[in-house]
Image (cartoon, rainbow over all chains, first blue to last red; front, side, top):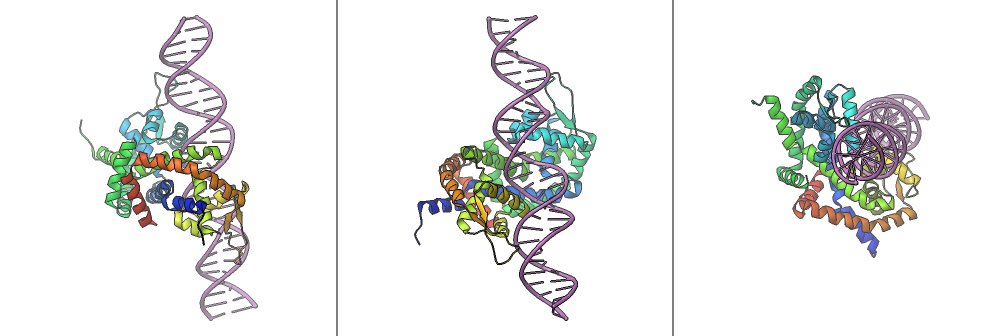
Length: 145
Length: 145
DNA sequence: GCCATTTGATTGTATATGCAATCATAAGCT
DNA sequence: AGCTTATGATTGCATATACAATCAAATGGC
């Protein structure tokens, strides 16, 4: 039962690949928040955009994308869907290429109602992952940004 | 300039949401591996499945999904695409509901050629995130699994 | 042996994601 | 002014992801 170079590399990937782990945790974490938010008809990906809009007042897509490391085309379609639901509105700008957006009253109200669900999911995930990891995650994410 | 309860909660989410960070890192990390693997026509999500198949010999979908916290319907379609490309094949089973799959020779060869690209991306990500985070990530991911 | 239940997987539908190409406007150069 | 380049965003296309519903086969009780 000899191990080839190939098998050794496969073991190294299976046991050490960072992408495998980050992606797995992403699925687990996303599912917990999504489950908690589901009664509101809201997904965590969308809540993040609502929060960015709430923080920024009027948000420029390129700026949001840079902060979140999100492709502009991805945000474009997310905003489109959320605009269709009446949660966001695009405001006119001097630069006529720009499409800055902001929360509607309805979007703000949705976000307000989403806060308890977020808190529940946040607590659940924190206890699942542990404080140590959560702290390091915060540091690392800030550094990457 | 008073801060409402709402604004305080929004700040708490913007500054502390675990999902925001895990999802952001997931995008950054996935993009690095995908970029490195692109010349091979392979994505890291698919490479993970090839590796699982290589490790398991013949892989049962439900078992792969449990390990990776992946929905079975997601894997079903991923395998479908990879089967269409000739990288995986479904093998018959005594239980006629089952659809265990394994690497084809072509899939194995692709995986062999993908190893250097994986190593490059892995090194790049490790230096970006730092050894401390990577270690904690491994612990945490093992615990969650 | 038959029916209800459980189990393994696929299909319908929707969102999320990114790359490449495109479009429209702005900015800069001459 | 007019041309080129840069910038902000959308569109075409493909993959990834999950929930709900369904399908098919195995299993368990009787």
